[in-house]
Amino acid sequence: MLSLTLMGSMAAVAGAQQTPVLHTETVEFSQYLQSASEQTQSAAAVSLLAMDQNAKVAETAISEGLMNGVSVLDLRQYQITKDQLLRILNYSSFTNYPQIASVVSYEYTIDNQEIVYGLWPQYDVSQQEVAAKTAQIEQAAQAVISSVITSDMTQLQQIVAIHDYLVLNCSYDTSVETNSAPHDAYTAYGALVKQKAVCQGYAAAFQLLMQKLGIPGIVVQSTAMNHAWNMVRYNGEWYHVDATWDDPVPDRAGVVQTYALLKSDAAMIGGVNQHYSWDSAGYVAVSTQFDNVADWSQYRVMRTAIARGAALDTASLSGAAGVYSEFIVKPYQTGTQVTVTSSNPAVASVQLVNANDPRGAKYRVVYQGSGSATILVTTSDGGLKTVPVTVKSAALAA
Image (cartoon, rainbow, N blue to C red):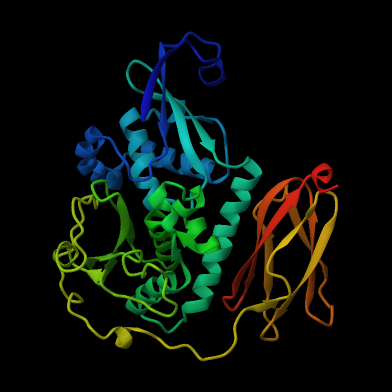
């Protein structure tokens, strides 16, 4: 939903000099729900792949700001139009910066020529937590790659491995059916760290992992279906990959479906897929090479069956602000490096207090303030576990 308000000159963005009359528009951050007029315009999203230099530089500045929780972005120097800004926010940022995870809405100010002056993002968490969660997305992505990718894999095997990982390790958040899914479910954070997401989260995670592997891809969206998935380029051809579609609901441990793995446009339209009215920024998937593959084992690499990751002596933590708890991380393999971080250091900070404890590495979680946080534990061989933390104020806990 978009509202338009007439504004006077805004010194915070425009400075003290005389400026044109400005308008401010407030928009809910896209969850693949666009207005009819924007749907019509979305076919022009192909232009995001050929943006002028100013728009490309602006996209980088905007996206880096959003990943770090910046509350005010002065965009005057880029001289981008309202249309360019909306394409960056609603289309290209999903493909080029899939780790953006905490924006819920934004306001932007334009002059009477529709040149953008400023952007005011609104986040669901504090700036410190935005940056911490962005870092955890990167941490989790690296763990996933370490877990399922080997140096001798072909590009095709890598695509299949990432698809399979998401299907096996992320479960579909059915609370979306009652409009109660948390914001994280729509992001790569939900898919990779919380391991519970809806289609937008699966698609963002898959795109991020493709970027890490150097495999060209885009996020595809269908407003009509209220759905998002991916396309990847392999051997010069584009193919659809929809990990959400291939994840059984309710979740079935160990089951990976392949209905929407490396499929052509025709295969996505027909059969059990029934996808329609999507925007793929002008790309088409015409190759039917994998449409009729029944046995995907030939494209899967079986890793040596050894224990990876680490054992934790706790599943969750809670306490009152001002105190702390400790837990042990014991890697299964010697020489394994461990990384432990908090999604919200203002609520729960974490630090290594004894690397030589006979039980493993001892970490201390200090309860800083009321709220919730997620402790993410990853290992250099691909282990990934989380510890949810709940902190009450000292007064409530008394």
